[in-house]
Length: 610
Image (cartoon, rainbow, N blue to C red; front, top):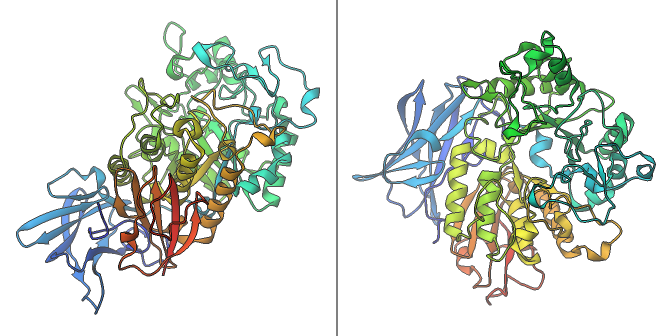
């Protein structure tokens, strides 16, 4: 199916002009210009932008620019008043007696709810460094050991492991969260040259606070760095080394819960009259709410002003303190952001998100806050709280479904059956539905994830290096910020989250997939070179069972991306009527998409268009 002749709009600067410079958000009361592109042969006779003025539909007539000689598209222009902090809008297209809606999820010929309307927010954007960067995720216990690691005593709770030992993860084995490989923060600092080779410039680590587990999401305090990681001094050295390279450092904070060994919780349990008792959800019988039934993770109560002051609000909070010297975090990834502040009839999730962002930006004007959200983040990323989410639902799962090897042993994340294998049409429908639901800005500022420490590895999902490289190409060339889980770039495997936390084999470089590492580096360089891959729009050009193609459009240049999950013909027809392209990158060097022969296998190509 060829899509280039379909009406198109998205939230990028080609189609939305706030009048305040490229990508700058509007202010309340502004009139912004919205544009729709239709094919020159499309018999649209009239078009309106429909917005909701305090929830009442209002229509504004748009004007079509006259077609010039030889032009293949007509542009429609309209004025959209930014009356609400988040202004929703869609387009009504008339062709004689026929009518269609153009919404964020595509073109429809029947009336649909407003859930997928386009939106423009009057809240500040995510910072430039975040939207332009590449994130590298590190699970400290499994990344690298420094020379000092051997001299640290193993705590009583831990099950010590050698660097080449197998990760214990099957059958709810109680050793799984206790197996300690001994990676530390100086080990990460020692390997920043590798992060540079990947092409990343934002280092994100999972929690560094002490906790009686290898993952440290069950913090026993937020006041210091775990001595097993090298303590405060090692974190300071990492921060200095990261910032000396001109990079950024992002921390990980559990705002939904603490560990049951946390000093606040221990005080709350030992003294029912202590102020900390109100920090948690205790029942009359002394039991307490916890995360998903895990008693080691007691859930905090964000209706408590005292709890919020200590954790997320104001200059004395955990959020603020770690953003100041000597640690100088540039932002936070918030663990379990989707559940934070929510319990039964209580829902203060938005208040918590706003508090985290307000506190972070008070410390650093260009702070970045990302919420972990492996479900539907619609409504949680409107612009005044989390800048975006880890986009599992809107990116990872659709991509897994399209590229999954039917024989893969990879297990679905939170799903009782394997991820289904679906065709390119379903893949694109899912991406469009999620983009329409989340909105352009949240999609562009969210994290594009092929996998993480909580999921199977992408190599195990897709089953081959060639398809893995196609997945990486999509990750780096679609709207969103790429987040690379350390080890993906060299082909590490894992059938589920715990298994994916295998140690980095620094001493076995002969086992690395160096071709895939080179592809990641090339993709990061390509993204850095071309504004279209960081700030450009997304217009689908072709959708088939085994192949998709799309344009990333930007005033400074447009790129055509084609991706195949299997062998097939070159999509030469896409270039008909378009300026000649220059091959910039292919994820499979043995294939030359400039020729008219069939592709030998999975491949992703990127072309520059004049």
